Length: 192
Image 1: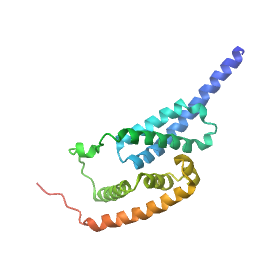
Image 2: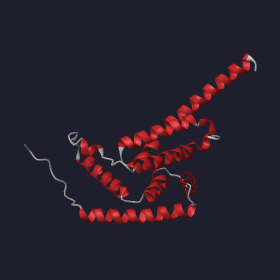
Image 3: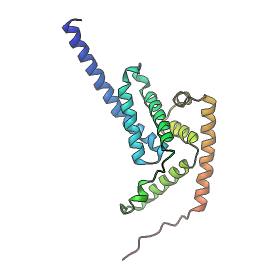
Image 4: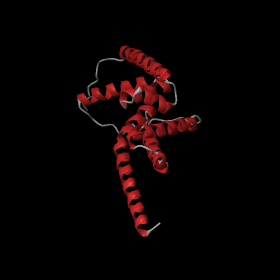
């Protein structure tokens, strides 16, 4: 190999790495949103995304086509999440908000209503089975096709369709139950 070929290969690899890093940065927010939908914990979602991107960097030579980067990254994250679930079976996870109650912010009425709605949806999603929660998050939050979800999760497409259908039905039932059990009255702040 000549010096010219060596230098050309070096620049080519550097260009590929820069392009891949830029694509990973673009996918970071999407991966985090999906990880949070699966985990329901900020720190666990951040760790999952970080581990996913690290694994993707280590195995980036296996990626043949950048067109399928999003599905490839989600497949890696899916496997990492399953590994984490297996590991965490012996630990009890605690929500950060239960520990840090003193970090309460005052917010406007619209933010409060938005937060309550978001919390209600998150709680309802958390009550679904992992398989249903995973499938709904992949199709509704990430916009993956049923075929892509089947490839990511390693399950038949019929099973994916069933999980999504039953998951949505269960989500509606849970939301209706939660709506009946909660009051529509928003407490006002007490004056000192």
